[in-house]
Length: 171
Image (tube, rainbow, N blue to C red):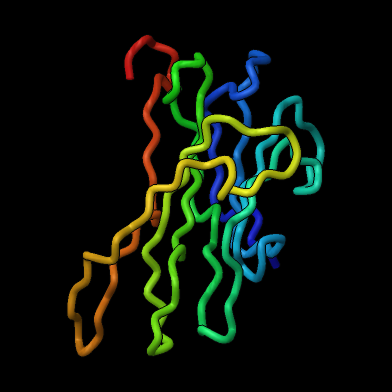
């Protein structure tokens, strides 16, 4: 199972054809390794049953399972968003989170730092997030004690998109 549909977003015309596009996350997709995750971009028109293999662009997470280090996959696609133009090209850009991004520590504890990728330029077809995304990483500085456990806060567990969603001219 690749958990296709773990997250989804529409709210922008990424390819400039006049139709809003669809971005779908699949946190356990394994092209980049076990549970590295991925996000899929679809351009309309879409009708009937559209499978994951009918994508227009695919963004692959960086790190899969590392059994030697007891690491989990990055889980890219945990949250996805089509957001307003960030680079001035008059087209929306993409946010793709990887909630488990980060190394396993030497004590075999998984301490995900999390990451958020801003994707502003990409090619049709398959893209590695490491090559096309501007990565913002968590620094592991946020942690708290709770009932004999250390809880580590990670970047990339949520995102927010802004824009004029009802076409009234206001954000």
